[in-house]
Each structure stands twice: as C-alpha cells, then as structure tokens.
Length: 171
Image (cartoon, rainbow, N blue to C red):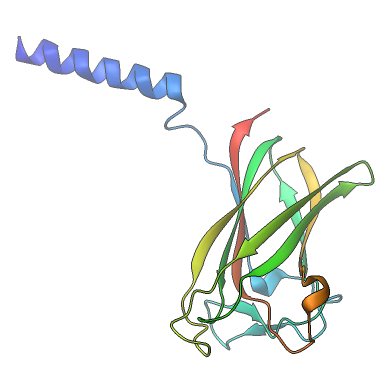
C-alpha cells in the first residue's frame, strides 16, 4: 500500500512539473563589464583589477554597449546588478535594445542608493527593470543615464556589475 502511494505521488509530481514547465531549459543571457564596448562611454572604466568587475566612473551621457545573441524568441525580463552610494538621490536610466531599424525597445528605470553612506559603493543589488519581446538573433543593448535638466556634470551614475536577460515566456 505504501509503495503504491509513493509511486502515485511521484507520478503526480512529475505530471505537475511537466504541465507547469518546471525542469525545462532555462534561457538566460548575462552581460558583463569586461565585454562592454566603451567607444561611446567617455570616462567609464572597467574596475577593479580582478573579478568581480564593474563599470564605474560613469558620468554625463556615457553609453556602454554590448552585442547580445538572443538564442530563442520570447519575452525577456531585464535586470541590473548595480551599486550606488548611500544618502544620494535616485538615479534614472534608459536601456535601449536594438535589433534592426524596425525592431527596438527602450526600458526606463530608476535605481536607489545601496551603500551605507555617500562614499560606499560596495553594496550591490539586483534590480528588475521590466521586459521586452525579443526575436532570436543579434541585438545591441546600451545603457545611459537619464539625468533630465538637473544634471550638474559632477554626479556619478551607478557601478554596474551585470545585466541579465532571462526568458520568461517563449514565443
């Protein structure tokens, strides 16, 4: 009796996993600082000298870019792993995703302070930005601050450790 009950429970669990998609292939693309193209990112540097790296020194309209290979079409959730000193205002930014002249997305985001004080850049958080439907193929992803009219030219944006695109829903 116990053996048949265990088998029945195991079969039911497998059926639930199959119906809900559990155990399926996880599709995730992670963009790292050392792979960024910094041609339009004046002053942005990859730091420190050993992993884990981040993009720092980010001021003005600097815009680091990555070439991204999207392996499968679907809805992707975009998240940032970043730091920002404590006791500072929120920072706004824009993530641009471009596939060709007819297929592009802009995701606006706001991040808050993560550090303990105004000199502490050491505390990193993961912040989910939003999502976009992406076709399979090569995309360009870029990130830039959205300072608005209040930018004085001296504030730093964020330290960026990674950008992750995670498939949430297949085509």
